[in-house]
Image (cartoon, rainbow, N blue to C red; front, top):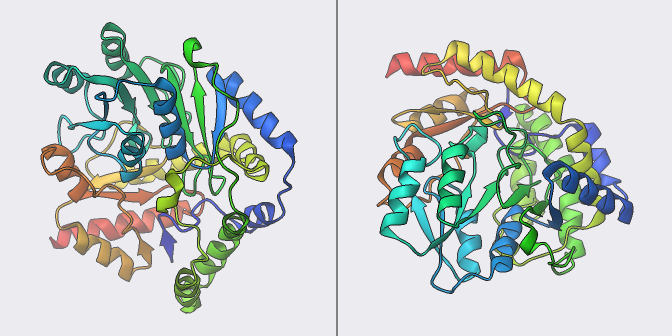
Length: 378
């Protein structure tokens, strides 16, 4: 058994061929914009990355130069980098406890008292676990703050008040990059839901260079071959070879904070992912159910992206799983300010388990069994 958290997690051979031969028709972009505008009730602008959509939202707002943007203290480097690139500072909001994933309304309230220069709040529903949107939205409205819902992890997440993520904020940001729920290798979108900001041009950004598009087209096929041949030792060699020649698409490439328009062919893959979203989520819920039954502590909400556990001596568990062919070292959240104490602990102890289509129910059982064996040995 060889299982990866990322490395083309959402792709099979059919998808790889679809990406390789996707046509660059303008119709796909028009159809995607229309779909997103109807779904999220706002004006849609497409981008090459979700982080570019965050930057675009901040740019459109034209905030005073000394403004702060409040974000989860437990997040990805790309989020605060996108804000900093627009010339603004971030206010990192700590977690209530180190086992939580989102900041609380109370934390936001306390931060506003300390820092009245906060003008924007971004929530991210980390890994698909919903934040307390009702209270947070109320605080934003009372303090005249812009609320941005970042759905990179949480397409189709439903809040406790019964509303779907993306139906409450002034802006909505989407990411269609590799290993996300909606995976088109790359892509992003900004939905402007607040009327006063909807006069921005319908498209933006530079044209993406052809070499990067070719690398993206090949990424699903390359990663499919790597995963399939890894048990025989060939996959590891192919992986190292492609990386050494920079032929594998890199989601954290520093150049991707420049704003690029999304080429048409990616849009066809986004539409395909939305068409298959229900099947995707149903599979993930089954995998989550297995983890929930076999691991402690249990979580009450079915993750839509990855299942998380918190463990001490995480490196030892990662190595133990790697010895069994389970590769989960990409823990994502390790760039957290030391002063944000609970978020720092979470970043150092979280381990994300895969829920994607290439993890079977039998695989999930074996992963959980191996974790339990390791836990008993501690």
